[in-house]
Length: 284
Ligand SMILES: Nc1ncnc2c1ncn2[C@@H]1O[C@H](COP(=O)(O)OP(=O)(O)OP(=O)(O)O)[C@@H](O)[C@H]1O
Ligand SMILES: [Mg+2]
Image 1 (cartoon, rainbow, N blue to C red):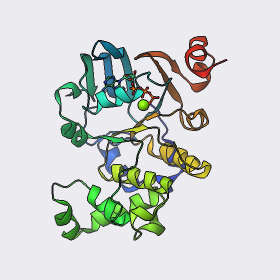
Image 2 (spheres, rainbow, N blue to C red):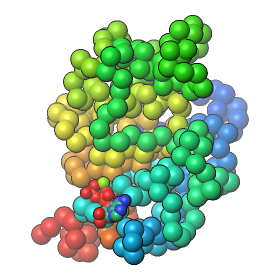
Image 3 (cartoon, protein in one colour):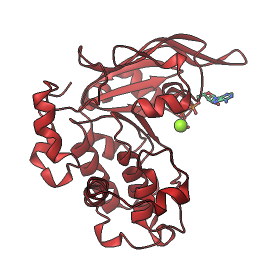
Image 4 (cartoon, rainbow, N blue to C red):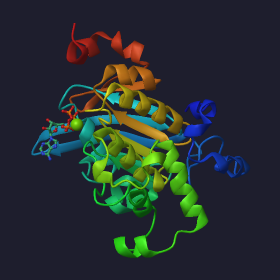
C-alpha cells in the first residue's frame, strides 16, 4: 500500500477532491473504500487460483495480493494468463480451485458478474465500448449508478451532485471541451478516456485495465500515465500492459506472469534484472 497518494501533487486529476474530509473522518486514510472492509490494507487476495480449460491450466496456483490504493502492473508473454486473471476477478470465468477475496469479506467466487461490479470492481476491455450516437456528457450520465433504463435515465433530471460528478469526471479525463460532442466523433484515444470516465462514474474501488495504451499516440499514452498515477492512492488499479516504457512510468510494483503463475514480483528494475524473466519475456 502506498502511503502518499501521488494525486496530492496533482489535485486537478482528483475526481474526489471534496470527499477527503469525510474519508479522514471515517478513519479510512487516503483511500475511499466505499464501505468495503479493507482493514488489513489489502483490497484483493488471490490464493492458489487455478483455471483449467479442457485440462489446460490457464492459471496455475496463482497467488496475488493488491494493496489498497496500489497501482500494480501485470506483465508477461502472450498466453501467460493475464486476461484470464481479470476474467476470474470479475466473475466472467470461475476458478477451478482457489480463493478470491475482495476486501476481507467478499468471496468473489460466490458472486455474479453484476454483483462483483456493484461491489466496486470496474473493468476496461481493450476495445472501447462507448455509445457513439450519444454525446460525451450523455455517456457519462448513463454510466452513473442507476437501475433505470437508458431512456428513463436520460429523461430524468440530474441533481446538482450528479451533474458535479459528471463535470469532475470530464475534467479528470480531459474531455471538458468535448462534452457535447457525439462520442462517435472522438479519436480512438479520447474514446478510451471516455470509457475510463464511464468506469469512474460508478466509483469503483478496484479498476482492472487490459492493455489500456494499445493503439494510442505518444501524447495519449503520456496522459494515460498521468491519469492512472492520479487515480492510484484513492483507488486501486491493476494494469496489464506490454508497453514497457509505459509500465516504467507508472508502476512501483510489477508482477510477471508466466504459464499461469507468478514468476517474479518487485520493482520494474528488479524484475527486468531477473534471469528467469529475461529468459521467458524480455529477451536477451
Ligand atoms: N475460453 C478459453 N478456452 C480455452 N483456452 C483459453 C480460453 N481463454 C484463454 N485460453 C487460453 O489460456 C491461455 C491464457 O490466455 P490469456 O488470454 O489469459 O493470456 P494473456 O496473458 O492475456 O495473453 P495476451 O498477452 O496475448 O493477451 C492461452 O493459452 C489461451 O489460449
Ligand atoms: Mg490478454
